[in-house]
Length: 153
Image (cartoon, rainbow, N blue to C red):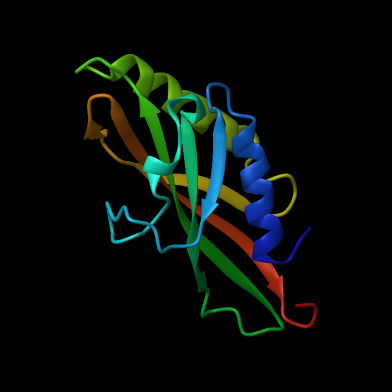
């Protein structure tokens, strides 16, 4: 089992790249023009063509530790946001939205341990559809739990 966030994020990016219906997966580290929910920054979506959508922006997560663990091995949590951009020319985006949500939830559920790099990964919540015709986005808040061996890292 990997004991660092780089492997977990890389594994998560690989898993999300195999979601049916997703064309592009990018990781952002802040500094983007779009600040939407919760103050997280992400990519500048205007830099991407319609052919690259639906797109998942994996925003660099916040890392928290479990204060109860006092040994050399501690529990870490990564709280990250997946912002999914998609194009739908209808005012009612229900079909596109539901399909993307189902496919992402199924893939995260099937890869619960992020290819063996984490102890658990789950979707904490999903936002409502944001945006306007034709560009829409939804956000998934993910929490990843893993053990960090402080003698190794």
